[in-house]
Amino acid sequence: MEGAVTLRRGEPGYPEALARVAHPPAFLRLRGSLGPAGARRVAVVGARASDEAGLDIAADLARGLARAGISVVSGGADGVDSAAHRGALDAGGHTVAVLGGGLDRLYPAGNRRLFARIVEAGGALLAEQEDGVHPTEFSFPERNRIVAGLCQAVVVVRAGERSGALGTAAWARTIGVPIFAVPGDPTNPLAAGTLRLLREGARLAAAAEDVLAFLGLDLPEPRPAPQLELQGNEAALWQALGREPRHADVVAREAGLPPPAALAGLLSLEIQGLCEQRPGQRFLRRG
Image (cartoon, rainbow, N blue to C red; front, side):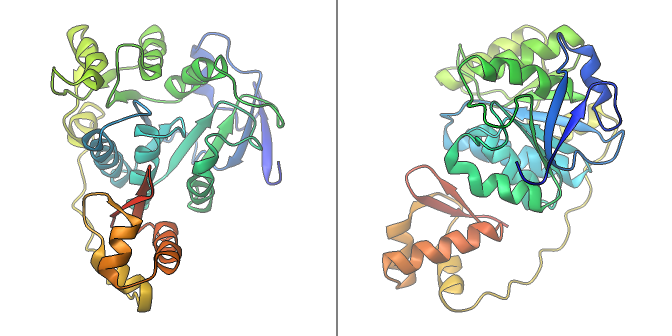
């Protein structure tokens, strides 16, 4: 893949932290930057089919961690992973997506714009597979050991009983990486996995401050919001967006725009990090 490099075990640039995982990758394909040597990293992972509250929690956690200078690591998947990457980017921070296939076989395809944004913002895409290798059901559990191995802590936001995020927590446990879990409604199936982790001794993470305190860091004061200089369609769409996801047609109607023009404007706002797209062409305000 153009712009990618190969990091071989034992050579400069290869993450030393991966030496502690079972079967460390012989090589990694990297596009972008893993950040400075010694950078602190925290994984924020969870269910692909998360509820809206879980997505908001993941994004808020990632924003807080990124503001404190933490690199947010996740798996690039739909749901919690994507929300974590976007939260870090919203805060102007660094994030790493560890993928299940080759760097030229990006999965899920719907996250291509997010992956491009990660690299453009100085973050990284990382893969254990050669270029040309498609992800499989077996490559994702293997990917999870890399996510855990890179980090000083793993935070699980939403997880059902059989969620792959629990696999990341299991890898973390085997190498002594602290595990945090976000509590949830006991009647919510997506909280079953995180509640089990808490019963098994995971630390509680209600906000980024919980993780930062463990790492000996404080949450910085929020930076003043920059003045937006949107014009035309983008300005109208920004006013029509809210903090809850709304279908593009609803936003278009409130902005007084035809759906094609509204969708183009919403995608432009998404590229600027000012809005987020959820499944089903639903958008909400960010920033």
